[in-house]
Length: 166
Length: 424
Image (cartoon, rainbow over all chains, first blue to last red; front, side, top):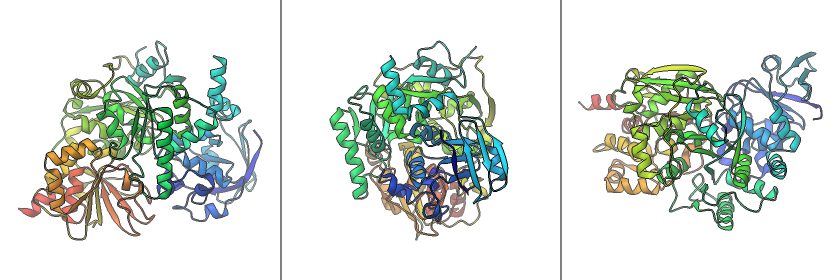
């Protein structure tokens, strides 16, 4: 996986899926349309101003609530390269890997990161660098099964390959 | 080593004698579920993956319940994608308007899930079926697509928390208060990635409806699933509904749990969850003046006939407060008919409440009862996040149906006790 680089958008604990993509926009599954409303109810500027490659940085239990895959879909469609949090809600976690949005837990780094900090991340080595503050953090690389999912290009490709092998 | 209920069901569904927490397994699902919000994404992924056939036509349930009856042109298009897919693949259990209901109330009633099953659904409240001693958990649309193709799902075997219930609940306390109490105690991520397994002699006094409400909200504590052991209450329900053979299961006596929580049911009061998290619990007796604009009774959490009875018992002979809009959503067509037979519809309409056809509607801020800026609702639903029922500056308070109905009469958040005292 290539190195990721961008600015941090910082949020608090328990950012729920209604905050990520309000249900009133779930009458479509078009990524470009969903991207316009990403984080709308807690930060109206995010969808307008987030740049390609930027990061969402958040506290504990990010993505709690609904199973809507529209949440990681909208985040990816905005151009976000990865979500970094203290912890993730479980359905958001599996949805992100299933559809190929990199996410990882780095509690110590999250505490130090301020909005607007420039970050670079090496997913393979498990390294996060806060360029603005000149600090570096290790994080636990994603589990082997998740790596396999990502390497296969998502769950459906993984399942297809597995069926062929049978 | 002994296994928890979830471990036993998961082991059985991946063909192993035993599994333990942390293991990743590919498990076979007995039923796979999608709705009108999550299925269209899954159907797109299914087609893009080049899949030609579903794994079994009779083990997929597709329910049009979120934005139905179609809210607008976009939602009509979404439902159409699902309807056409169901036709194309001969999906046996496709539920359209007129035959549908809110998925997590509908499927157990239709006997499509039973004790010992493994069920996954692209809806976070799929955890509801644990009340029947099934392992069930919410997943996303890509998982749904993969499961429709293969009948399989990848799962990490969760650690289990043992929640030991003792005593009997007091007057006005319902299943909703018990689960809100537990969420208040452990927090909205208190069961993150874990199974919430109920145990103890307090279980015997809990009706099936209350158990469904409790397992339904496992996700509101971050849980992977909630699960009750099989007992006579489960047996009576399963015998009346199940369309397939089912299996009565118990956890092993030497099963390992990551935590144990003790709850004395007799010490619980009716509670209200304040905005904007379900963990913000306040006993209704301590709620001061919180005026409300809207009351919602319904949802996969509390839209069962028992819930409608509970609200109707409060409303009978009383009127909804001037300036308050009360909306009632029977969760399925059968419940709707039952409410007619029992005269509950008359009670609601005479009290000044509106009754709707089954839909998830306002619970997720979809339609049929959206809040304006600054408005406040008390609802028997499951989430009170920012903007959940409408405008980002509106508020949702969660409660049981009796408290919601008492609040509708009082025009502010209040319990049935306070209502009765006022009238003496």
